[in-house]
Image 1 (cartoon, rainbow, N blue to C red):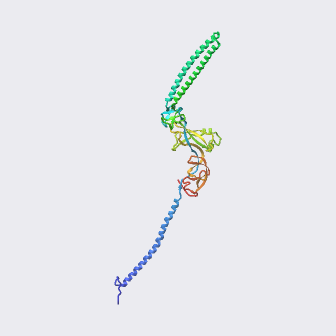
Image 2 (image 1 turned 90 degrees about the vertical axis):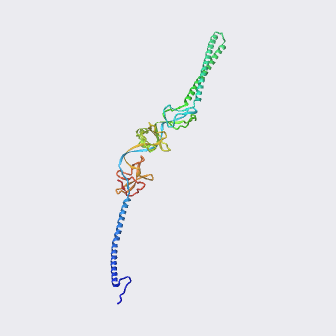
Image 3 (image 1 turned 45 degrees about the horizontal axis):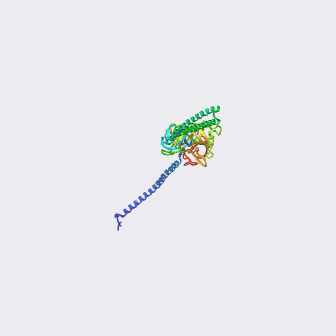
Length: 417
């Protein structure tokens, strides 16, 4: 009996085949178990992937609800401070001009210097002016001499006339001879009057020359601060030349404008006069160009009774003390006028937006959903807040953050605590 051999296998062929079959059975069983295990693992993995995704969507939805600032409305008493543009000027700004023509020989002050009343500011060449004074004095001396001679002639003529009168009355001389002495006396008197007139003219010329000489020293008519100096030594100046402006800034006047509505509000629609309204106005403040509030309060002193038709406003003036000379003519700023109101609803201007000249706010309902609403506001405001006159009531809530930027109608928000 022949025995078959397989290449690479043991000589016992039947035993090898049986072993191969057993191995195949084991492999098939393992493969079946693996497929069952995969059937369990894959759904579990899918569930594990879905659960974080759902949780992320919920967190994303919560993150999409913005947290914004809100305000619960209440009635309160408030004082609004409205700012009105102004330009400052000294209590009395004096233009300094020479009263005589001449060359400047000395500038005695500097720009911005504070000077006292009577202090010398400029000096004009005095040579020609002094010469005029000397000539006027000489003319007076000559006139006085002429008057003395004329007076002597009058005395002589009068003596001759008196003597001739006695001789005429005694018929010693004729009437024509007597008349000649009378005429001589009258002529002497006329010459005396003329000499006296010339003496008076010479005296007037001396006074004028002395005044012109005094005008060569330009002095401060009052205390103040020197402005820009437009001429220096050697310049020819005339009475039309503006040397500088002297500002008396011990008190400063702030000029500003009030419109018709503001005037009506001040006078309570005409129930009181402007003077009464001015007397009742509180102290005002001055905001400087750098935003700082000036340390000295001021007072409104006048309001023009005429409204400029081109601007629709009246001119008002307030006065501010300036003891340290901090303020100068030409400074700009704002006059801050306080306005007291009682039992009003006040909202931030940042909580409003505007559509076609109407103001709107976003009101929150109980579900924290926004709803736009038109509101009416007072013309008076301080640049930060509005006084509500209609459209809102105490207890309601409005959004004060993100208005006009991120907040929309029918939007759910989370109020900030």
